[in-house]
Amino acid sequence: MTTKKKDIRALTKDQLREFFVNNGDKAFRGNQVYEWLWHKAAHTFDDMTNISKATREMLDQNFVINHIEVDTMQRSNDGTIKNAIKLHDGLVVESVLIPTEKRTTACVSSQVGCSLDCKFCATARLKRMRNLNADEIYDQVVAIDKQSRLYHNHKLTNIVFMGMGEPLMNYNNVIKAIDKITSEEGLGMAARRITLSTSGVPKMIKKMADDEVRFNLAVSLHSAIDEVRTSIMPFNSTFPLKDLKESLEYWYAKTKRKITYEYVVWNGINDRKEDIDALIKFCGYVPCKVNLIEYNPIDDGEFQQASERALNNYISNLEMHDITVNVRRSRGKDIDAACGQLANKS
Ligand code: SAH
Image (cartoon, rainbow, N blue to C red):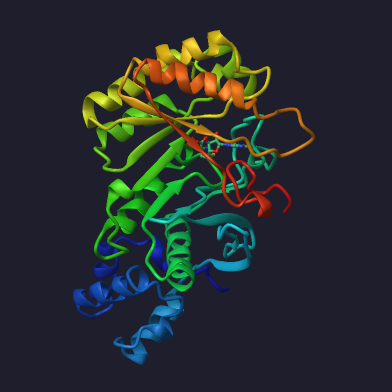
């Protein structure tokens, strides 16, 4: 009977060192292999040229290196690249490269599908199939970094967890991946260039604060009125705004990092004066800024981007209260690579 081989990248560096010692080799061999697995992102044991053939064969008998494959790649008129990423078990997620003048940003997925049910999001229509492993998240960044170098002549500068899935529902793997992305043994990127975007899971926001994470936090708010928020983001009934508020206060007290609120203004949903007033009040709780995101239609028109006038109304009122507000125009819309469009047509 053949036993299923273990994914070698599920092992920590210490476990890998221990494996070599137990097999009569030096612990140092573990360091070398670890470097191949992460820093050099090797896909096969045969790539590991400074490891003896016998050792490579022994590894091959015991382990697999699960890795992702860029299945299809689409390039938008604005330079945005959307990748369909095939996982080792055949499931597919999407990751996007978003170039601007000064930076290139990777938008990565944390789950296959999503368990939340945000009414305006295409990913919500796929049921959550499984969490991504740390190496599957890390590999998306490696793949997009390669594309950034190839098409834009410089390395990736930023990462946002705004692809498919809710990162705080796959916390351990997301944190493991970020550890690898930021460590010198991995990609050596600065944590402050990474933003985790969440629909807002209060318990996990507090945990992140306790864990003293160094990356940025964005919260998909979309409404600061429970009734409205629950109607478009049903899980708000489980995690109401007062719990979210409390967790954000906790986050700020511990980390002293400003929070970004992502917010789409829709016709007839959150375009009233009371919606603006509620947002202004919510913004008073902790230091923050607001990103007004352009709506990317996903369907038959149940949701419609509010008028320019309604948007300007938001902007002038927020600014009157000294709240920083940015308008984020969407990118890669023509290839369904914009926020909330992932999985739209696959
Ligand atoms: N689950 C996480 C990350 C994925 S969504 C979260 O909720 O934050 C990334 C961002 O895209 C979120 O702010 C989300 O609210 C927004 N979004 C989802 N669907 C969208 C759409 N159709 N148009 C514009 N933004 C959308």
